[in-house]
Structure formats: structure tokens, C-alpha cells
Length: 282
Ligand code: PAF
Image (cartoon, rainbow, N blue to C red; front, side, top):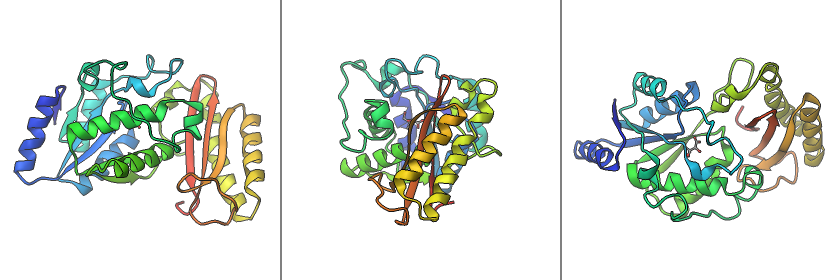
């Protein structure tokens, strides 16, 4: 696996592959890679001849009091894991490569509507930062397809919207959420969990399944959401939201609509966890 930190080197590599007629799959990440990320690379591998991954902890998607500084950075083990998973090239740019005029002087991206709800309401500007860096990475890598995990359900919808709206010639491929044996969705932030918090964190997936089962029994959406919040609070979470929405994240009116998804974001101590469950998916 080749590792590139400059755009020029990355582009030379991608041009070479294009000359050979290869298709390019792309997996953007913020590093600290776990089995969930490796599964994204493996999925990209199934759809493309060559796979490029990127590692960049993007400052513009973190709020002023969020975990940008302490976000785990583990480049050595990430490089080893990517090479073992069959990734062909890693783009590991410094911040000046991604934002040559600084993060204050950079062109902004605002995706309306969908970024103001759920996580967007609790992390103002977060999804604009995500859209901005993903747009930059798409321009830099120029992939045929890119893989994003369903665990970040709202992020996936934002990327899909942006890609379509901006006419990026990139196919977006969603990847299933990988879970630990006890149901906790894999996430780099799980390692922030202290002591009993790790066990308590499994309540999120249990609550999502409660929400799905309650919808299947026909309980009203508002009642399901209230009960989900109560269960999470009783377990010790501070809840940002626990909601049942349609697949496009508009509000669900009735529990028997097709394509519903339950979404939770909740904090345990210093750790903010998100997860979701698509009712028709599992
Ligand atoms: O999901 C992530 O890891 C990040 O939000 C992404 C898509 C790599 C953009 O920084």
C-alpha cells in the first residue's frame, strides 16, 4: 500500500490507475480504525479495482467544545490494518493540504434542512463541516464510488443529498453497521467509555430494538419516543434525541409506515454515542 500526504502524489497515483483502466473506490475516515472501517474497505474492494482510503481528523466538523484535540490518532496501527485489509493507497494529508487558506478562509458548504435536525441540532455546523471535507476529498481522489457506514445514518443522507445536488460523479455505497457481540455499534469513541459505562452503552441498541418492536405492535410514535428517552435516562444517559423517522429523516406519522428508522444520540459521561436501527433492515 502506498501512503501519500500530498495531493500531487495522490493524483499521480490515481492517474496511473486510470490509464490502466482501473475503477477507483474510496473510503474516507478520521483514522483510529477498527473492524467497522476495515469492512468499509472490503466493501469498496468488492465494487472497485483499486481502493483509496483517507485519514484526516477534520477540524471543521468539530464544535468548539468537542473532542477534536483528544480524538484518538493512531496512524501506525491504521496503516498496518489498511494494508492487511487490501487497501491500495492511503491519503494522509496534513491540515494545510486540505485547507490551504486555513479553516477560517475556506469556502463554506451549507446543506440546508437535513443538517438542522437530530445531530445537526445538537452539533451546529457539524454536517456542513462533513459536507465540506467530503466534497474536497471527492475532488482530490476523484473516485468512481465511495463507501459510508449506515451507523452515521444522518451523515449518509447528507452525503447522498450533496453528491446528487452537486452532480459529483460518485456512486455512494452504504455499508451495514458492525456491532460488538453485545450489540454496541463499533465506534472510535467507544474507547472513551470508562468502567461501567461500557456495559451501560449496550442499552442504546436495546432501546433501538424496543423502538422497532413497539412500532411493530402499533404503539404511537410519540409514545415510543417518550418511553425510549425514559429508558435511556433511567440507565444514566443524557439524551440528545431518541426518535422514529422516515428513511429520508422526515417525521414519521404512523408506526406502520414502511422504511422507518429509529435514531438515538445520547451521552454517557464525556462520551456521545449515536446509533440507529432501520426497521426493514434487521
Ligand atoms: O465518518 C467520518 O469518519 C467522517 O465524518 C468523514 C466522513 C471521514 C468526514 O470527515
